[in-house]
Each structure stands twice: as C-alpha cells, then as structure tokens.
Length: 133
Length: 147
Image (cartoon, rainbow over all chains, first blue to last red):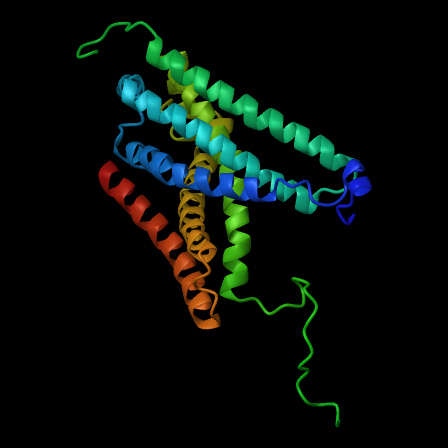
C-alpha cells in the first residue's frame, strides 16, 4: 500500500480519507437497525403469517409502512458498509472493483425494490373484505 | 536452552496456528451472521414483501414454497424447500440474535471498555450463549403458539 503521498493518492493508494465516515455510518445505522429490525422481529412473531389479508392490513398501516421504509434504508445502508469491508478483506486485484460495483447494484437495487414494494402495498386501493380499513 | 521450555515468542497470526478462544469465535461469527443476514435475510425479506404486494395467490405460493405446502400431492421440490425453508428461518433467527448481541458488544468496545482479558473472554462467551438461548426461546415460543 502507498504512504498516502500526493502521488500515492492519485494512484489510488493509501488512505482515501473516508475511514471515520464509514465507521460512524456503520454505528448509526446499527442503532437504527436495533430499533427498526427489532420492530419487524416482534411483528413477525405476533402476526398470523399464513394469512395474507392480515399481513396486508398490517403492512398497509401508514405507521408500519413508514417504519418498514426506514428499516429498508437503514438495513441496506448498513449491509452495504459491512459487505464492502468483507469484499475488501477477501477479494483482491481487478475482481475487487467488479465485486464492489455489484455490491452497490445489490444494495441500491434491493433498497429501491423494497421501498417501492412497501409504497405499492400501502397505497394500493383497498380491494374488499370484512373489516378492511 | 535444553529446547523443551514453552515457546514464549509471539505466534504467527494464522487461524490454523492460533488456539481458538471465545473472542476469536465471536469476531468471526459477527461477520458470518452479518453476511448471512445481508444476503439471505435481506433477500428473503424482499421476496416476502413482493409476495404480499402481488396478492393472495402469490402469497400462498410463497408460503407453500418456504414453509408448508398444504397440497396432498406435494411436489418433491416443495418437500425439499419446506425443510430447507425452516432450516434457513431458524438460521436467520440465530444470525439476527448473534449479530445483535455481538453488535451491542462492539458498541461497548467502541467506548474503550471491556478489553481486559477476563472481561473480554466473559462477554464473548455471554454473547455466544445468549444468541443460542434467544434462538431456542423464540422457536419454542413459535411452536407453543402453533399448538
């Protein structure tokens, strides 16, 4: 690795200067995950998961949908940071760049899919059914 | 001098050479559980969300694939995925608790506390035991609810 001199930085060697930013974001999203994934965990335990109507009513509640969207943001941000460190430790050479690009596709694509799907559930017109909101 | 004193030189940092201890185990389990949650857990969560949004039939197909296919003429594929799904769900429950508890340990370590050899070993052991215990408690609760 380079010594972080000006030339070394130009060549992509040495510290990028983003270490503490990465570290702090990992901790802050960890705190978000404790709250939001904890909420999901308790909900999954208590929901009748085989009953589509009940799960749909739960997920289309505005507060639940909001919590789920925040959870997707926090979780996918956190997993991007964690998997990035994994790849940097174990993948070397030109494959590393490819792996990091694919990781970003997964993290951003997965989060976008999750948020869009939650919005679709929450904003879908109520079909029918007794006791529907 | 006689050549049979215990070697007091530092040992090379290879996993094959180090004697395993709880702190090493909890460190690699944090990474393993995190990566499992990041890939399998997040993927399954997105699949579940998509099935909810797609409607009752798609949701029933999702449940029939990963949990229980009520069809009396159940396909071999679903016989396998019904077992695999439960294994994955128990594994994800363990990964969730393991990563949560060792993550909380890391937040404490970040303050500079808990590095003394004894307390480090103690809390590493507690984290591993708590992860297994919470997983067992969760599934006993789920089984008790189902009966």
